[in-house]
Image (cartoon, rainbow, N blue to C red):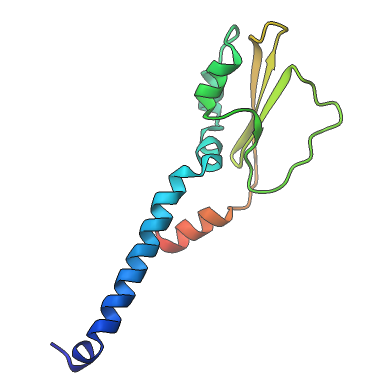
Length: 130
């Protein structure tokens, strides 16, 4: 065993435990952040799964969460925001669902985001190589 490892064995063991513990905490908390799981589902593929006649609960089950802004940045809704129209905003794209008076889907539209900046979680995961 090298002299350095022998002299600093306790310090290296403590550092290793702290680093592994920190990574374990980050890894276990990340799936609990629902914003990222919904954001990942806002794609053309999931939008195509939504059909006329579905109710809002079915749409939420497909998209992973209620209507809302799931992008990393802030968003101000337009002035003409309609209650029969629900929006899911994500970093990859946006889905708009129009419901009739009975709460059934009339239409579902997907609009991809052409250029976006990676969020802090994406940058951290890329930096860590995850």
